[in-house]
Length: 549
Image (cartoon, rainbow, N blue to C red; front, side, top):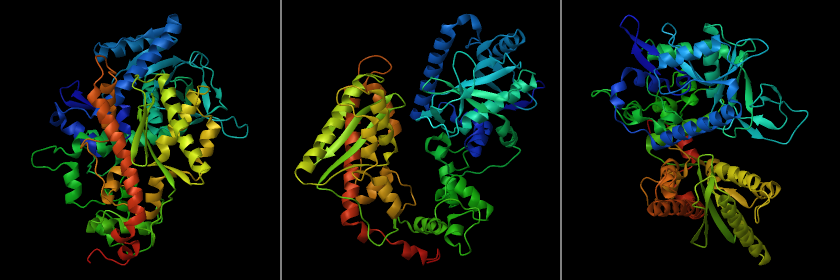
């Protein structure tokens, strides 16, 4: 998003594709109060992702252009936007086969602005196909299935789209919206390929995922019309809690001296999105439910367009929030799988580069399996193999002694991902298990996800993250800044990722944070076994309770 001075001196509003996904109210505040955030430090996690994305684009550019420089026109950065746009238009007019770093002319009437990493000339139909380079996964590997749907991919060096039996797509609406945005801009100047497709090169940089843009253009047009109207202050917006709020500078900052921050506004209005964030709040508002009190007082039938958790639980969530209850018990008696030998596991990864630390807790003793070589590094395979070998030995020794074994994590998505990824990337190294061994373990009863145990047995008005739940059980982290995003910054310093000498104090900080995570998981498990029934009210209490009581 960008505001500038138009041809006649009026303030013009421009919108790029990044603003098509995300919070509408943030878009409005960014457009109407740009000076408020001047000098405000960018969120560390956002900054790291932005820097990583820039490095990834540079790697892709150097690789592709370097492989056959004669087929490329490179639009140099660091010059005024008007010059870059003019150079891009000249390159397309000259029929350049491939253009890197193209910037299309800003459209004063529609407000569109945008650029594309690659503009690839369609040699068969004419025009150009937009190809974007992104630092997230656009596909996942899979075993070939001849009967299944196959996404279309192309080689990165020759445009040859065809069904790909070896991958499945990872849906990314932000990618398709950006490609539709670029297609409309190319179309305006007569340079859009009639093929109506776009491409995305993802984190793995191994193929181009080809997107069919025909089905998304109507949705894009509606979304763009809405967003540009927000930027032009033609449509009103109010705060609403969404996942983006966690890193948004407006969450705790007021746009004007006499106006509240988003956090304060939502709290003052007891807004329903505080307990039903994102699309849930949108559904509820369509039924006249604006506040937590409205939701808590609901007495009619369930909304016919509610497609989330049972609606009764949503009402209970509102009533629990209103009374300050951090948890509500779904079950008469809380249970959690226990074993004679229990190992708690928590990993630390750095973006998509790898998992550098596998932390464990056994009998109160913390054992980290770590590499401090900057990722990516083969030494990651060594530390992973040592972790897996150690845990499997503990498991085997327990069985040999006739004891039961269980390993615990909190929200297994990350652990499962890096177990599989590590087995795949370091296959053949001593001690590294096969993917089949990983699958057999994670699909078995000895791999216990405490997040699942919490989700199944508690309603959580303030969220289900470990940082939200463990304090209810009495656990508190030593570091007040403990969190996944913060640990990314610590890691960069710990391994001198950006040069200089490694900061040993940050290594200690990471290890203490990881140790606290496994201690929190154990504390939560013990609390669920011993005290949760007595300390957490049951859902029946709130189902009978009205907000007035």
